[in-house]
Length: 512
Image (cartoon, rainbow, N blue to C red; front, top):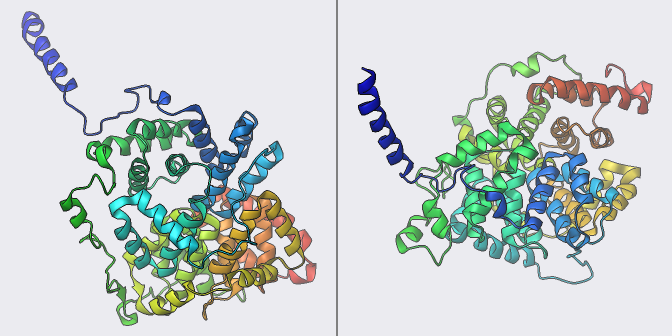
């Protein structure tokens, strides 16, 4: 028997192993197969590390990396931190800018001069050119898909995301795309991650460079995230992509023809038939379990609670929780719900909002919630700066000028983005069924999961300044644990106790 095993079975197993080792993998690059750390130059690797720590909010490590950063690289690195606004929102961007400013910023790029008149569609043209460079023959399909999620969202991605932020001087589109991969390691969503990888390849990166960036996930985001990305990477078929990406010049006629219009299986339809009439949507007839388990608050309606819960779930990437909460909204409130979703761009960036909008359309959105002609007219309008200043003054009141000085000190262009886009175009949108106080309460629901006391307090005070009661603020904070978890609920409760000391006792009846 042992002779048979040694003479017949073992040689056969060895031959099989040698044959398997010669079969090419579906994915050309497997982690650990080659020393990919050498694929990136040291400067790009440092920029990717900065992008990752800024996105995670690990300010200690961010400051350490910045201390060792050569001064000649400060300008490009500062741009990468500013770009963090697109995929992580304003709060984390402010935190990161504060951290590196304390260490010392020797150089930065100021690209927007208000004294220089620019054509009305300047950023839109810049954005279209950037999208074409990064998405190649996918450009039309991408922009059409974004528009069908919501016209405002689609135009914001092009005008602001690609035209105003990613088209700035400094790092190339390839370097910016590599840094985005490092930042997205913590909010890993397979479909978007695949798009980000192919976009990076189309911008000129190699598979080795992409793999080198993904190998940094362990140090920045932890081993669990690294394992998820490794599993995803091993399932990708990148050989064909590695040869041509989405480049127009490398695409054949069949490929170009197949990318005309939306994908046949897409839930979004070019004629907007993916929107439903009100009578086709039936909300739940009972209260949401999360709302039922919380003490009632006078003046805080279930509708306001549900809108805030939608924002919180979006901010945390809890798409199943978001879909469940959406089913409890009356179809006539879908317009207000979409406004809340769009408003989370301020606190979470575009990627979370994209996932959230797609989840809502999968669940069903009322036809009356999106008025396409009205949206197009708003997007082509003007006066966003004045509107943003009015909204910010309502929220911050006597601290408005202090807030403005702080943002301009971090970066003058950041202030322009805040006042013109984030508060002029996003928060400053008008909606008959959504007040500014409702928007601030929803924003508070997003902020409750970021564990940053100063900014959480600013939004608490902002909600009060806009007309919300202390009881309503406390009520929204009470429900954040359902999406953010018990540890975050404990942090919020502890911060509330210190915050209430700044409020006159006569206003706190029932809020403690």
